[in-house]
Length: 214
Image 1 (tube, helix red, strand yellow):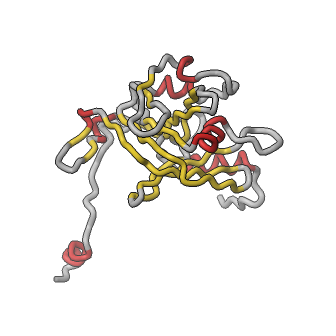
Image 2 (tube, rainbow, N blue to C red):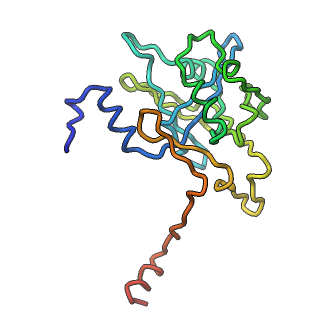
Image 3 (cartoon, rainbow, N blue to C red):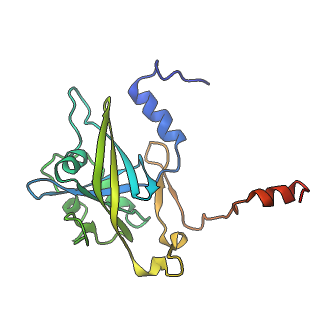
């Protein structure tokens, strides 16, 4: 079946993309508005896009309905230029899901979900204390394209719980962290527990040997 995206509705396009771009990591973002109120919300249109400098990108749609009104997360980042990405584990899934509710701006999702915070090292926005790792970020730019916003942030500090760090690299013991990822809609997620397998990366010399060459 072929889909001409010039003929589909935004909702149909959304359904197609979230079912095909999978699995997606979840950026559980904490922000603060100019009045000092905290906000927490998950976004799965997210990934790292560079390491020198270290950059992450998050897609944040506008609020539904007429007009161009950014979600609280996007507005807070525009106003303060700071945010924190907190990783989501199986254990934290239900709390993250509560933070996905479209509460009014004055509601503190962290309080609703019973989550404590801890101060970040560099930015003024706190991290979620129970998250195993957090990325402290500063906004580089926000691009508004149609009703979508793409936020680029530079990671300025990373916190990882000690048991998930192999100091030799340092490497992250991701197989022990048990984070979850987003699949298609309808509340579907994927676990990483006991799901790791390896496909060693090949060099050209490796490939040639497999072909019976040098």
